[in-house]
Length: 491
Ligand code: NAD
Image (cartoon, rainbow, N blue to C red):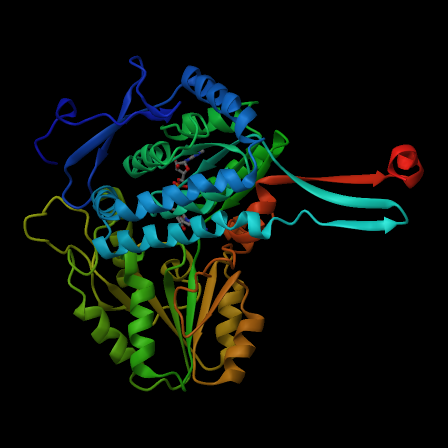
């Protein structure tokens, strides 16, 4: 740890009524940079009083915001987009500092968040309030209404992008919004709040409450919050989904993942190697879309040599950032050590790298483990670090059987130059997002993001039109007018 103390660092408050708020009686949560272990900030941990107050602020804001026409609501989003672009450098540095990823990765997550913002800004053009004459003189019409005060609980790995999956769509739909960011990376979101205010978003429409598990539970249970989304680990996703559903709340909870990449003999060696390594090692493997199992089918020639070469080119602390914490580093390295002890071959070993001048940072280098059986711990658990386990099989069907048997279902990808193999795989992979020669098959907006199986609890995807459906409710209005009623003065 560096020498700084809590009194040296600024406390970033909750965000409500258009500004930061730090209740004096609340304890604080320290925020450390995983890049070098230094103390970089702190946030308060909200108790019941704070939650009550923020929900009340949001409820008050909802009254006016929900009746503001959608064309007016999205004007704020246009201004917010300009501000995000203007402040993208500063935000990227903040994301890098609190999360540990590289600056380029931090910038890329802002760009991806902006895509969702652009989608939400187009809502007036795609708003689906159809009307139809269902019998003579009788029409049926859909009207979409916001839900009320809604909540989003987010993980550490994308301090800007994951919050941006939900904030713009929920707000454009007319809801008042409370974000509960990860207590490990709470600082970026406070800047988002300030930029929203600068963009002219009315006070109380966007709010942030800081805290960990207890605060999150207070929020889920609060009767003033009607719907929530969650993104994080499968264990917590399931708990949160069950807790919210038991209270009759609308909930969507995205969980963890174990993503498989399948390489068949006709794959292009160089393109495949670069792409496999980018998928497994990007963001230090801390992406729910990161590859963590590589299945080589039959004779794949020297593809693995190319993959090893690509992994060895990566400079730790430069091309790959840190993982989120010392605990995460210890956990990830434990998986590698146990895999080695079980007799699997560690082809590239990322344990214990030292980054000069950042000896207190939490770094793990790219790691490749070969000869892994399908049931091995490292082939089944979500390690959430830059570790790729290699499994060898004889046929595409065997590869598919392994992919299909894993309980998660975020992403799966095939590397091939054969359209038939690509089609065969896409139809049979048991995942919500499938890639062909793309190792991180995140759909670009307006295509929606969402996995299957234990990677998602609830219905639908989190972005795109599914996001609009999730954050609104439909009213069906049936109207009958008779022409006679207007006869006196119209004819
Ligand atoms: P996490 O589940 O530990 O925490 C997520 C959020 O839940 C945080 O805000 C945390 O404060 C809160 N929380 C933690 N424990 C809780 C509890 N018992 N009750 C209520 N709230 C609780 O996840 P993390 O470590 O921050 O993030 C990494 C995980 O997120 C990985 O598993 C990754 O795959 C997953 N993830 C999934 C997606 C997706 O789209 N499926 C996207 C990003 C990350």
